[in-house]
Image 1 (tube, one colour):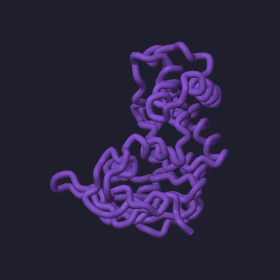
Image 2 (cartoon, one colour):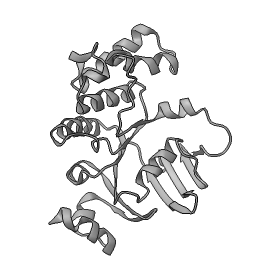
Image 3 (cartoon, helix red, strand yellow):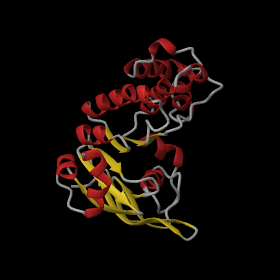
Image 4 (cartoon, one colour):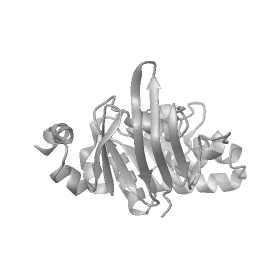
Amino acid sequence: MEHLIEIKGLKKHFGNLKVLNDIHFYIDKGEVVCLIGSSGSGKSTLLRCINVLETPDGGEILIHGKDILKGAINVNQHRVKVGMVFQSFNLFNNMNVLKNCMEGQMIVLKRSKEESRKKAELYLEKVGMSQFLTASPAQLSGGQRQRVAIARALCMDPEILLFDEPTSALDPEMVGGVLDVMKTLAQEGLTMVVVTHEMGFARDVSNRVVFMDKGVIVEEGPPEQIFTNPQNERTKEFLSRYLN
């Protein structure tokens, strides 16, 4: 079976620092994969390579069997298919909530204003933000801004959504609301790769958990295996605080 995304032998270094070292990784349609590990283990860099925000130094990234690192790709079209939600929201501060969710649709997907508005309203309602259509991002809490960022990504009808520590910049009481939105998306079958420190979410929502350390994948498997019976010493050590 062809994977939606398959990564073979991916390498990335910054100067002398090896950030990714021979990564082999795949994602199937409808899967929720959580990447866990200490800060600096290469999780976010892996996502950024998939989204072409970083250029790998070696290896292949196959999407539907086609290597996106070979030949020129249309980066905007690629990022429509492979959407990304960042920890810092990345909303346009000069536009209200509704326009934030319409702009990409009109410019990249060439949708009409009316169609873009309908789609934006639909997804803003889905994430519980329909009463804030005319608010500017500055008027919103961090949790609300992140929900708008998720709605904006969904408006582009991505095949897969990458989440880079979507709750790490939020106050603790706002984390739950964002995770609830993500749980709903997972239940609806959206393909998701999530870099997270929220171990409860990784355990309860993902189909597969991937533990990274020092630029390599140390261990991966179903959440019940990784959380109750990790095989690798480094995984056990990392999870010991959470499991206790």
